[in-house]
Length: 254
Ligand code: ARG
Image (cartoon, rainbow, N blue to C red; front, side, top):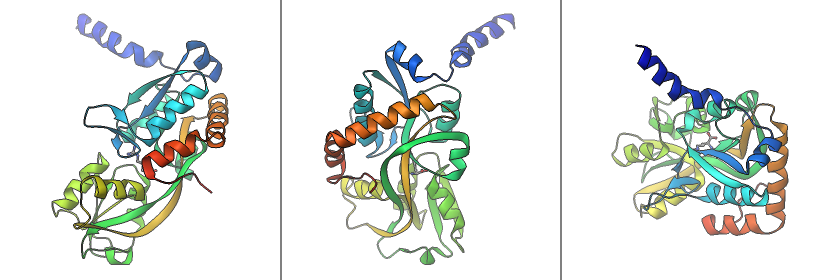
């Protein structure tokens, strides 16, 4: 029993030691710890070679470089990211979080790093509008703004939640869902990447959102540093270049 407790303490120690760092502390360490999910292509995902990649990874690396820091990436399940952020596990999170009132009570957001919307995806001939979702089964990733939106659409038969967004796509393709609500760029990329042009159709945008990075509640020095670095990248062409690479267009909010 003693041995077990000791082991437990040793395992938990690094966690309890983690604490929210000010930008000065981050700077002094030379490294900035960035939290993301790694299952939301093309924003943050693992490629065929198991490398973490995507628009937000490129952007996070560019931000770190601007700040003169070495990025250290940590991937965790989407629905645990903001909790771990407040526990000091990362200095910031970049995982396509839409700015919502609810989340803004728990964490602080930077200026948005892109603007987008949630879209209805279905098989050809399936529902394309919120109205057509009446009596239908809709799949969404758990803890997302798509989940919230789906739960508010009147008459939906069932909202099924998935740990990972691509799992909802799998179920849509397998015929277990009538529709999937996800990010419009995610949907576009999935259709292109998996050559589903003749299988899936994009319906209407259910809502629009501003997507931003998050820091622990009250961590003003890190928010300020990130906002400054993001503004610099947006001004010097780096942001435009990264955005073109992933989307063929500039996705900044205007
Ligand atoms: N934009 C949506 C939201 O704010 C989805 C984010 C999902 N991100 C992810 N890495 N899976 O909830």
